[in-house]
Image 1 (cartoon, one colour):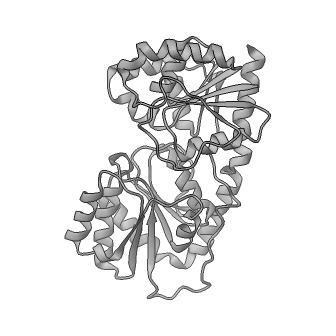
Image 2 (image 1 turned 45 degrees about the vertical axis):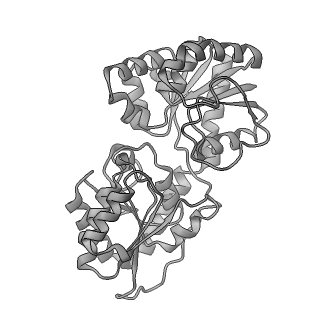
Image 3 (image 1 turned 180 degrees about the horizontal axis):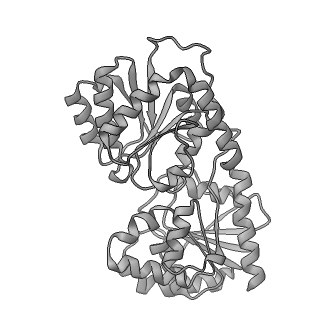
Length: 365
């Protein structure tokens, strides 16, 4: 089968999908819409053809669509694919839809149905236009599947599969049999420093909790436009020296950082099935996360972690203290976290859902 994979970005997720597709009999063509969302320094897998076309090497602008639509149609005539796999919905999905090519699989990236769609009436119209005409839809969480159905997607042509993680790469950390009462406690977050991920909420909660508990330290990976604000919060709170900023970490190194941590925290306001949450669970870390719908699909209060009301600094502060007070149970909670990952977040097993969708689409056509 010849598959055109059309994406707005080049990210770790794109790399993972394409690398997995190279292990199948399919012939895969990667078509990128613009060059303004490149967040992975790895090369496109050698077995995938990174297609040169008019929309690849310049930032995407809405005003370019009249030029890009006929260019994409010409590209499809040249490549002669059996299907097009496109996402996010409102840009790559829109281009695929306007091309008229079928069958089309539209893949939600989470934020497109939980944030972007609400930006304007125009974005809602685009979302409805794309989903009402899609031949198939996949997403990584039930909350986005329900959202797609609400915008006109045929529920019988939808599938949900958490993108999952490599369970051989992300393995459980070792816990001390009896942690010392005065041992340091490392809180860990690797969400990007953008407003949608709520890292400023964590910063303010950490200041309050750390003032009361000298054992607390924060390992804060990543970077982003909130960098100056976050450092200001820590500086004014008098806890800057208790926060580590390693920056962006490669996938190869990432498990080592999870293993340095005691408690994973995600204060995100918007998420599908968060890959970083699944990585933490796979590493056997108790998880403390915002109570947005997708997180509630993964974390069970007091069993494999804890939930706090989204955006509530005081509640997050209290939950940090509650979690630390239960550190004698962390090994048990961490084992349940790993079991959750093994049962639901196995990337290799979950990826088969996408391959089955491909086959179903071609058979119907």
